[in-house]
Length: 475
Image (tube, rainbow, N blue to C red; front, side, top):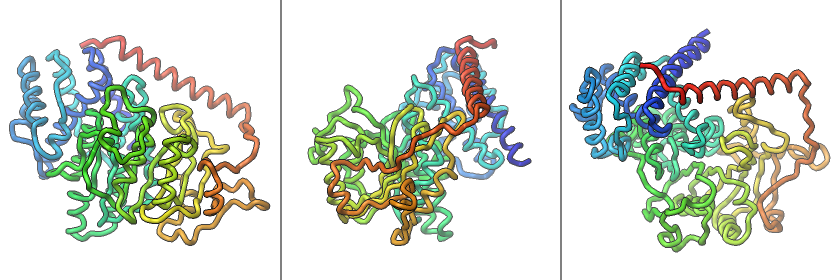
């Protein structure tokens, strides 16, 4: 019953969020811009609610919600723009949240409508994790919008959770995500670590010094920073920085790195990576450059979990040189083969590589969660439970106890298999495939029709929302 109530509350508040979105769309504001404006306004409101509960606010007095909530007309627009300008010039996390902040809602009546709709709810003290559910829904909707290109930043929560569980960051360790998106890995790591000790010094270190994230997209830096602020993480010194990690020359090293870097070629007009990082093997592939960057920022003995496409495991030339360096200087002990249908970019074949710095690769254990596995975002989304068998097989903290489920005679289609050091050395690539069965569709006609209807309903709803966005709104 409690879960039903929570779902109802989430649904009601999400409806309000999309109503706000419709208002901004009617003003001709692009999707990415109105998500940013909504983030700013929601942040100011939640900060006000925190202060009413006796929690500290780190905003200047003349930049708070109460300074603009009762205004209207040009007074409201001018005050809102003044707040954004001041906060964008602040130090620490506040300045990071409002990186390059500017108003995109120029019509006073529309801005007032948004402010009033936000004012009608208490957002900070929602039941359970409603705040997180709504926030994630905003990000997910943004990820579904192809024009925003935000899908590349949205890593499924189930996958993040499994990676964090097996990498197992400790409360005394530093954790980095050099292409942090909306800080999903950092927040999951924080929740994982904070339950490990009640020691005040360790908790203080965790909040202020343990986490580091970077991204080179304004919207994403804002969303990530706001996410951390609402968890009281790194308030005085921002854990999130606005930077292009591939040209970063800092010498800071981290004990744990977990990330899902952008794939493909580097955007046109970007600074040439090889000019700034001459130590890198030269390549135009983002994923290969990010792999090299990750290898350069992890401490000796440190642990990495990184999502990468199949091309990193199969391509020749520069990619193979990087792969050879990885095998020589790092212990690539585990690969998780992921299915398609879990990211907004359809058909992308990815893996999670788990490695440690300081020793060469010997045996590689591979879990094939791809062959014969079907997921879709609409009807069969991947859940954390789907990855539990992998987590169990991984044996985090006691990898010496690993046992194959693959057996050449008894279970040739076992998903968990060890490839020996000799087998690895004799291969040209690391694209391990062994499961060999015809992928038959075992669904009944009724099940197929049901799934087709669910997909059709999803498309109908998407068309309905699109019409709403394009059709304007009466005020």
